[in-house]
Image 1 (cartoon, one colour):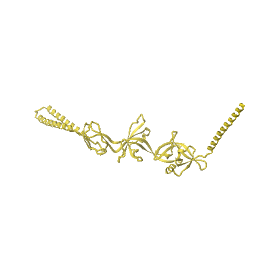
Image 2 (image 1 turned 45 degrees about the vertical axis):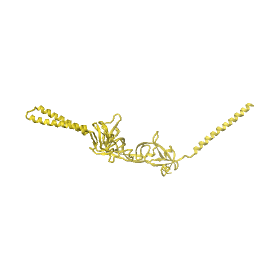
Image 3 (image 1 turned 60 degrees about the vertical axis):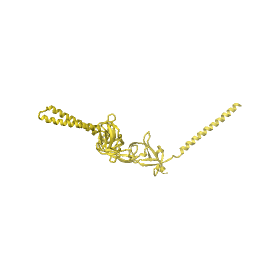
Image 4 (image 1 turned 60 degrees about the horizontal axis):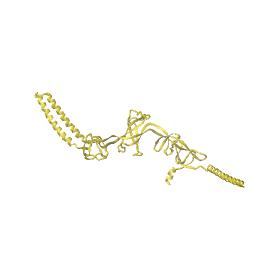
Length: 367
């Protein structure tokens, strides 16, 4: 009796588990059939053809700007600051007095030395008169004249020290923020203020030795900075280092940029483009068309599908130079290929697409 009951229970359990497994298999089959028959989504995109443009070849570099004349003004002698004759940020001319140090001690020493020089001059003149009558020897006259030269040299030395107590601008320019105060004791070489001539800025930059042929004095060069977006400064190459750096393979150069409005400032970092004479024919697409990926940059090309349908084909590309929102395509796209410019974020190879009249991103922002 127990054996019969066990057989019935096992049979029931088998039927139950068989039903569950059958239901799972049926569900999986129906899901697969649903996805197999489900229509592929259509993505709305905008596109435009890749075009051929003629770009003048350039050599890009990063430069550092400095003034054609720029120094930290300092005094060559020590002293107490008695007068400050400039304001921070003031334009000054060459010879403008910037600062005067106390020179009372030197002036007193100068008066004493001047008196000694006058006495020595009188003594030398007397010796010249006496030597004509053979009253004194020639050696006495030589000693008196030598003493006169020593006294005159002392006078000149004190005058030079007094002159150095007055600090003047060595060239035209604009002073910065002053770094001294009245009554402060200055040491020789201590900075007083920065003076920069902003009429012309120099850009120091380096390029690879393979671009040495593009570096010629007086050749045109362009410069852009983050401080003035969209503004291009024009200049010329002024000097090229005669030696290539053996450690890096780079060669240094310098360019001059007129700066009449003072827009450029020393110390700025700038993007420099050396303009070549040659003009290259390149295939370009909008920068927005490129999808950047660790596995390679790519664009989506519009291809004809079945009937009126269109599909997206992913094409790996090699990128070149960028200019004004467009990028040169070195390989992967031909002139005339229709390239997706917006709406490509959800695309994959073979996705169905539909062309929009306007940029879908702009439509979404308008809503």
